[in-house]
Length: 417
Ligand code: HEC
Image 1 (cartoon, protein in one colour):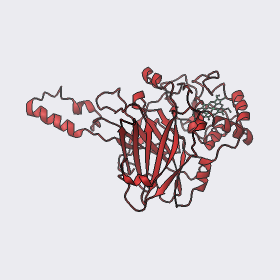
Image 2 (cartoon, rainbow, N blue to C red):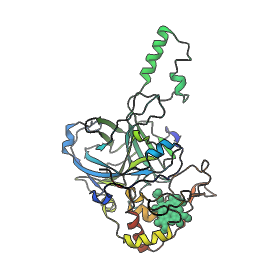
Image 3 (cartoon, rainbow, N blue to C red):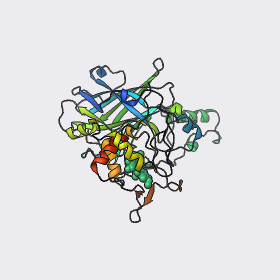
Image 4 (cartoon, helix red, strand yellow):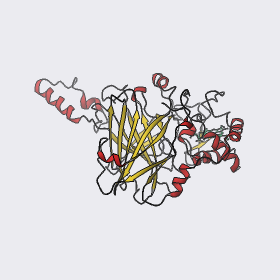
């Protein structure tokens, strides 16, 4: 952990509105559970999308919902993502004595690669996140890359053309620019060969993250993960595989019977990056044949117990002044609070209940206050300097909270065919 390099992701805020034109989310069957089949002691840490072992896996469809946590300073990207739908992803899972591996298949009309040269080209990609600790299944990290005190390990891969990592001076231009080097003939050829050898066509990174404004890249090799992507231009589908060690320097998953996992995908064609993505809620992965973590599986697979109709009336009366709840109702000012119109797609029951009962338990990591002074989501704690929410605790009665959760779970984007 001491070899980590800190990087700050500049953030803004949510506003986009998503049209809901296709299949209602309720018509797609998902039970929030992925079954990982045991495949013995074979090495699956470098598994590829075409490996025959996948025939042993069971496949589940999970839904990844649009989450636009930040509004980018990019009108084109914001417009391209204004009407995003949820995406279906077919997930197959296996595990062996030392690794768990997933194969994800999703449709994407265009293959887009991150370019090392053009800064306005974005790559298709996918990520897996796992909480560093999940002993209390009711207090999982915030789904958007963890939260203060509740870190996640994120592993990310992007489709790339050859790209270049900055050198020790953090400057790619000096490292690559041959035009101001006064080199000719063989010297120039040598320099160009050197540049070519520095190029990287694999992009796999791991981060430990307590919210997307502060992600720390794990560069010491301790996050043992293998990721690959391949695009089929006939079916217009990506297949991605990720194999994660069950015990490495970042996560100790070996003793568990089940794990909470969330997947995200980025569409480079829509200029997705940073806070714009499709993301699943926490999904339980049951390691078949291993015991333990029953409470986690139960927590993530049990539908909300409250009455959504009663919850709707209460939430509209008490919460709509700050939060937008749908495209059809009058929108609240985004300066007040995050938009909740898709919240049910990527949030667990426990997270929603905790957000209402104890608004400071997880403070949604959002915009950079210095850059967005008019946003009033946060106050700073005078002692610690940490963010505190401006949302008051408004419901204390458990029945009311359960009803509100049942209603909030119905707020989600339609699903792509
Ligand atoms: C005074 C304005 C205000 C009111 C009223 C309010 N909230 Fe909030 N709410 C916020 C702010 C600001 C945040 C973001 C900071 C944080 O995480 O608390 C937030 C965050 C949330 C979140 C987490 C959102 C996310 O993206 O993860 C949920 C869920 C939520 N509120 C539900 C409710 C419900 C339900 C009510 C009504 C009982 C309500 N809020 C009333 C201001 C408000």
